[in-house]
Length: 68
Image 1 (spheres, rainbow, N blue to C red):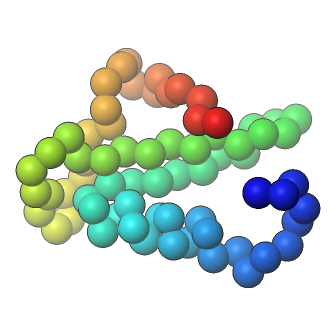
Image 2 (cartoon, one colour):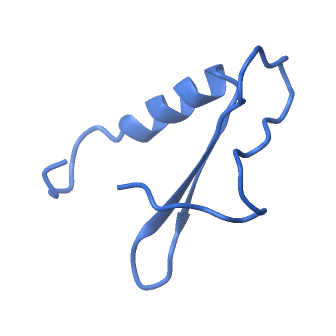
C-alpha cells in the first residue's frame, strides 16, 4: 500500500470471498477518530459444513489483537 487513495477497491471483496470459501468470516469496524479494526475467524481444522459458523480462535469473547 502506497498510502495513496485509489484503485479498483477489489482487495477487500476478494479477501472476504476467499475467507468465506474457507469457512471463515471477515469483518471490519471503523473506530471513532480514525483507524479500523479487522476481525478474522477461521475454522481450526478439518472441514466446515456449508452454513455453519466458525468459532473465533482463542481468547475471551471480543478480544482481539492488532494486525499490522
